[in-house]
Image 1 (cartoon, helix red, strand yellow):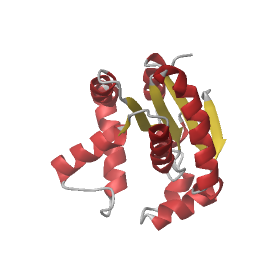
Image 2 (cartoon, one colour):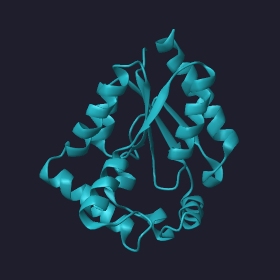
Image 3 (spheres, one colour):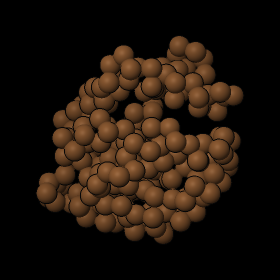
Length: 188
């Protein structure tokens, strides 16, 4: 299969962003240009612009979740359409997008239609709790049943790996090698 980029799924604190950075470095070693995209970046920007809140502010995560959900209620593909425009602008120049936060079924469906390698990063709730705490976020979110945390639990992924303790460089680097191999056919 000829893949056009990567979509990373996983719960909060699983190591999605860190894996994205490791993958980006691995792709550079193969001469593949890549760039990060995230649905959450657009949500963060809108919440900052409209409410003056960041994720680190008290109530920041809750504001992000509420705003993201609210816009999805108005138009289900609001965030997907915005990210799709950015995705298309990158691929037009031969840049491999790495989407670091696929959490909902419509985002997963978009990634599938767009021909992305869909990767799942798994980690234990207790390890996620430690990871979230170390970032100054509410640790109890590690046990959340919010749809953004559970909607893709049963989805099928092209590649799935376990990230022990939420910060295992070895696990993430190995996964990056595997995913880079999956993308190499596209770059050839």
